[in-house]
Each structure stands twice: as structure tokens, then as C-alpha cells.
Length: 423
Image 1 (cartoon, one colour):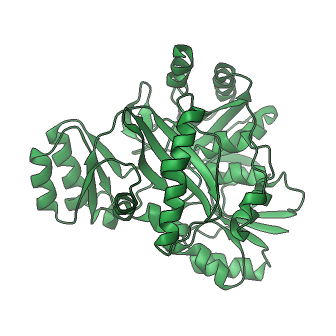
Image 2 (cartoon, helix red, strand yellow):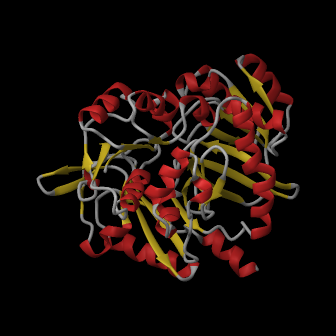
């Protein structure tokens, strides 16, 4: 079969690598892909938001199945458009992708259906929002309503920071029209957990849990990024917590979306906070997380393609979803200066013996060489029998990769290691 994967980052590289294991797939195209994927898929220079271009390519090349991975094309209706020309897809429709596309929608959904989350207020007027934060509780969390490349959330620890956050999002339009409306919500405390789950709109089959590291600098300092590294499984996510999440969050969310006429099929990402009052939803994503995918999929033992087709066909209940009991760590190698200004275009040297564990997020390929081309450049993953050995293994591989201007955190997994030692 011919498969098309929409997207061009490390997440898509991890998806493509896992799909390659399926004996039923003969060709994989990545739209647009990146220069570091050329050994695993055929990159095609069509942007992930060029819905018409994606559909035309799929029809012209007789694509049998499409995987729409990033948030933007999902929210724009890429799955709808491909379905209209008879191409089955992995991923939610535009109507269901709103669960990530609008934080106002998702917060209101949770409130309506009693799904545990932080208390919140919604504002469409900057002056009213500023009035609220001048007297409201501190610390607080301020979120742009729409998509903002994973950076539209600001935690304000002082009133001055809260005022600045509202002004930058609503008045200065830091995130464009995504900030026309904002959510101001209660600051929750506790360990964070990411859980990705396959669903066909009826059944939910969670993947192994993970822990993301959003801040740019060691010690969880610096600006929020799209993610500087991950480990899996998350030591805070016990079987008891998992059962509670299934009963109070996962299944109720799927049922709520169905009740709203927005049946969700694909991968639903649950960003959770394990508070003293139990697990609560921080955010939903309508797709695989990045870089969570780079630790979760290497632990998947079942056929990803069969699982994806089962979510599309509504047969997930009959499909095996099995994960290894090993551990994984992914360290992101970024360009110095990320997530703000940075330079790229530097030649990258990746030893052949570790290529299979390197997921390329931003690169261009020229004359047999690859060059850095993005903020987050590479995800370097190791799988092992213990968390510590997975972390050590990932960092050993990082040290083997060479490119100018490389930057990475040195403490990915440190918090998780402490949690395992406390038990």
C-alpha cells in the first residue's frame, strides 16, 4: 500500500519509522517531510497546511491511506478533504480537532460534562481581562485560545507577569488571531503526565505514559518550547491513577465529543496534572505529541498501521495494542537561541550506527549531506531496561552527533529518576 504522512518534524519521522515495520506498506511519502527523512520516506515539497495540494497529490499518486499528524492541517480540515475524495485517514475531522484548536471549546466541554480541570474564566476583551488579573488569584495560567506552536501558554507568578501576558497575547497579538480570546485559569500543582491514546470514537486504548520537559534550560528554567525532551513511562502514572483517568477523563471525553456530534477518531493527547484532588486535564491535543511520540512509539510492539486502520474503521476493540515494559528517553538537540532567534544551515554528522535512534525534526539535504534547518533539529532516543540506562544511553548518542550551534538540556529525566528513587 501507498501511505502519505502529512507533517515534517521529529514526530512524523518517528511515525514513519514505525509504519515502515508494517509488511503491508510498500511506499511512504512525507508532505513536506524534511531532509533528514530521505532514507525512510520520500519527502514531497507540499506544505502541511496546503490542503488542496495534499489532496491533489494523494489523488494523482493513488494513495491508499493518509496519516495527518500536525495540529494545523487537522484543525483546517485535512482529514475531511481527503475523505471527500475517498482516501481513509488516521486523525480527527475538523469538527473533532476543535478540542485542540480552541481552548475555550475544550474548557467549556469539560465544564459541561464534569471532566476534572482547573477553574477558569474566558475573555474576548483585553480591558476586562486586565481588570481580572489585577485582582484575581496569583499565580495564574493564561492561554491563547487558538494554536500557537505549543507556546501559547504563559504561567504568571506575579501580577506584573499576568498583566504583561494578557497584553502580549490580546493587545500585541504575539500569537496572532489565536489570542483574540484567552482563557485565564487556576494554577494547578502536582506532577505532570502526558498520555496519548488511540481511539475509534468508542474505545480508548492508552499508550505508555510519558513526561515532557517544556522549558528551554536546565532545571526547568527559561522559556516554554515545543519540548526539549521526554521519558517514558512516567513514574508518577501508577495503575491506580491510570484506572481513575480512564473512568473520569478518557472515556468521558470521548463520550462528550460524541454527544456534541464531534466523534473523535485518531490519537487524543491528554495533558494531565496529578493534583492533591486527583488527576485533572491541563490540555487536550488532537494528535500525537512531539517529542512524546519519539519515546512512546519505540516502545510499541504492535503493528502501528493496523492500529491506525482500526481507529479509522471503528474496530479498535478487536485490535492488539501492546507496549514493551522497557524505558525510553529522548533528548532534543536544538539550535542555540531556540525558541527565539537562532541560526541554522550547519552540516550535521550523525554516525551510521545510531541513525535508527535519531528522529530528524529540522534538516535540509544537499549533495549527500544534511544541514540543520530549524529550532528543534533532532530527537535522540534510547530504549533500555531501566530509566537510568535509557537516559545515559540517549546522552551518549547526543555526544556522538556533531553540528555547530547545537544546544540541549542536560537534565532530561532527572526529575523522573528522583521520583523512582523516592518510591
